Length: 168
Image 1 (cartoon, rainbow, N blue to C red):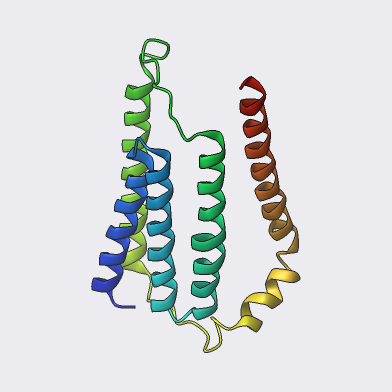
Image 2 (cartoon, one colour):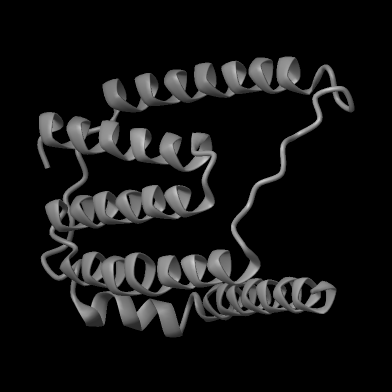
């Protein structure tokens, strides 16, 4: 992937991630997340990782965002206003730490861009065999932990929805 298309996709990914964070409506946040997942899928396709791109679209852009929207609709999707009096220095601390993180990230990218040659992928790097083999052998434990984490999130949404219905 050349630098110009990557830069455009990276900028769009950052803007959609900001849309997720800054949106006041939970449904709009989920839709920005959908846009972000689709942009990441485009990056996978541009890197000739077709399998990962299709999985990104089906699993994340399809199933996970639909699950988020379902949970948002189930629990009401309202966001309560944050009380600023309880933590007066939280915004200042978050800004300082965010700036330090951004400077460190820019430094790491600048060092990596100038010193390393562009990586060349294997011809079958995006195939099902190249992804599925290590996923179910070397990385089986993190794969299963991710599925348990998703299950816990789904159960948490159900518990929140049941608590809300008992109040009615």
